[in-house]
Length: 312
Image (cartoon, rainbow, N blue to C red; front, side, top):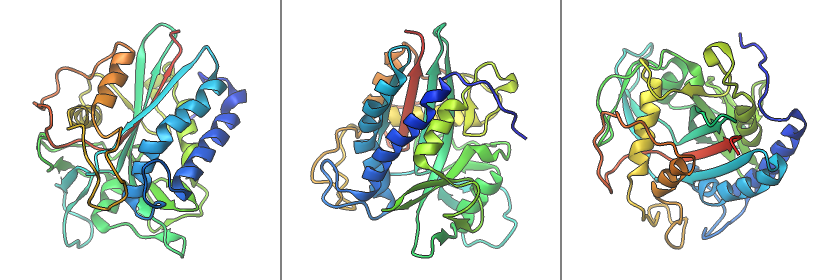
């Protein structure tokens, strides 16, 4: 059971942050924005538009609410591909395959306190289109991965193929239910329903992530995502850094022609965004990653990064 913790942001601005983000998310889910040729229809459309069009809009909407004492930066990288994983453990039920995508999106919150120390929390998100019934049943290996987090290895190129153990921690992943009516966030459940006690809008979830950050909390347990440490004996933190490192070294250009959503190049298609983001606070990705990367290597994941900075 999670205990209430002190907040590091003013409580009176929380609703304003949600309302501002909700306006952006609704726009992303419903409308043809930027270089898009049509409103979003499939999963990749929603994720791409959130990063391409929504990141700056959320940033611009939030900064006046936070005021001068808290600097916010929202950035993203869209990769168009998702890392594939192979589940090592025996499934509890017959499945045609033990391979699936790790995630469609990695959401990372970085917080720099008044002393200049940086803390991180992250969550992986698998997105699904909501049908007319309002409920979906996730693919068996995908559900098994997010519901139980068995041992798995990342089979995509450039990743270390070692077995990874997320300690069966369900905070590692969430489902994003997508439609033109909005973007809902649910913890793993079967079947997934768009209406339940645990349902949040993406705007509510993002703000909940911000307010769930408390560096002084014993063990830094949290309900919205998991802490990411510079070094850890567990596989969660090194895996997040692996994903960010490979994303940061991706090629800059990608036209997204496979699904025909964009007319031209996408301005945020590349890891330079993450490199600039980490340089902004004087921080850097951990140097001891076992993954050797070169510019233009394949790999990485779609990333939405939110940094809050009180070091001012």
